[in-house]
Image (tube, rainbow, N blue to C red):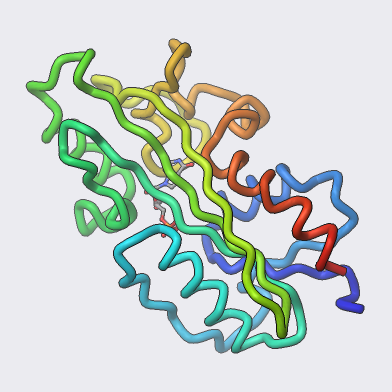
Length: 199
Ligand code: IMP
């Protein structure tokens, strides 16, 4: 009915790649909103990941209308910073993601290893035209390292060391990251909704 196409509501190519990899066995074509010129900018001003993910999904559904939409909102919560940067993760320093990492290291410079606990959170939404959205969540627990390590992944990956790992997420292959990530967990939970309502 929907020509086997599902729209991913993001312009972040790293996310598109990760989501396509997570769903590589599903018989659908995943297309990012880059393929739909004229899409208005979506202001991510909700105070929860879920609120922002829903906002993105609904905005894209209203613009494109004929295809099911997947959206996510995600970010890093650092315990020593009372949960910051949270929903401000992409805008933490007001600059590039490298600057976000440098600012995080600066704020954490006097925090001991035991107290450097943090987690990535992801809220994922799947919505089919005319139906209620399905929402799921995923987290990965870890610590913030003392320096950037690794070239893979994106965002805060060079600083994030999952519990029970010696490597940062940026030092892992994409498959290794995608077996345990917050995004993998949230999107895996959406799989059955996609099968039930999707194409
Ligand atoms: P979003 O595109 O609004 O969901 O912003 C997510 C922001 O959180 C990104 O720009 C990164 O700064 C951070 N983030 C989310 N997921 C990840 C991840 O898997 N690795 C590293 N940083 C992430």
